[in-house]
Amino acid sequence: MRNGMLSVIAPAMNEQDNISRLCEAIKNVMEGAGIPYELIVVDDGSRDATWQILCEEAKKDSRVRGISFSRNFGKESAIFAGLSEAKGDCAAIIDSDLQFPPETLCAMYEKWQTGDFEIVEGRKNARQKETLTYKLFSKTFYKLLKAMSGIDLDNMCDFKLMDRCIVDDLNALPEKQTFFRALSDWPGYRKTTVPFDVADRSSGTSKFTPVKLVKLALGAISSFSAAPLQLVTGCGVGSFILSALLCIFTLCFPFAEHGNELFCWAVAILLALSGILMVAMGVIGYYMARIYEEVKARPRWIVGRRTDR
Image (cartoon, rainbow, N blue to C red; front, side, top):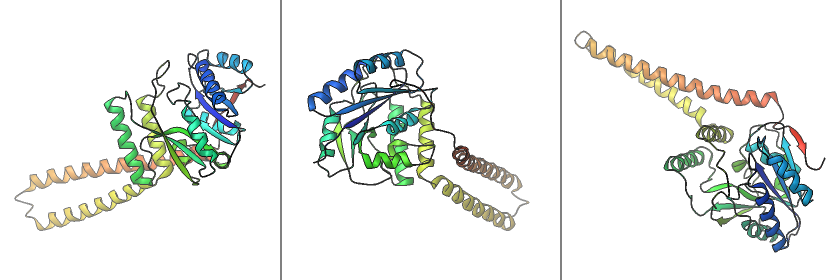
């Protein structure tokens, strides 16, 4: 049986109404289950009183630690910043809006204690109170990601508990652009799942906008699959074959009798090929932009303030 401290990591952005509730909920659950823990809250450039409230909570309980970014760097950076600060024998990611029930952490910890698993993932029982557009987008994204990379993330989320060995592996990765939900599975190891029901937000609104979701999806697919580049190659081969057929058709068909029809077909095909070419250039350019970001090697985050200093 494993036994050790659990590091609970909670990214937060403009969550002034939820921080105190989060600290209290984690404390009650962990103390009730007898689990030694630390709570690391990462303030991702909040513009409200999130940091001030977090400092007050850290003064009341030494197990609560907080770091604040110098600006907004995004949830992915907040997660990995928390992992780099974690001191526990295992670490779990939880949302600061309490939609991921803290009680589920006990079930995750128990499965980790058996020694049979290095990662315990939370699997949503159902998607609750999501718009039809959001559900359709999510399903499409997960199917595309699975088809292109073989990674199945349907009904999965960032809510998971990981053994120290996985935390160390993730902290050692040099890449700057990350997708934690899939990257946490990349090291391998043994894993299992724990079902849970998504709770309503205790306060506030979601920080994810449609634009952010699209960027996240594009980043995830490009991080784990080169299929879009292969698709560009396939489009190029198809375009070459279509052009060859058009040449043969033009030479063999009586052009004089049907000149207008052939001209219209030629224009339509040229426009289609131009569109394919522009899309192909866009895909290649997106991969080049990601390479450019990696080559610059800028830090993924900058810590501006800490509660323990």
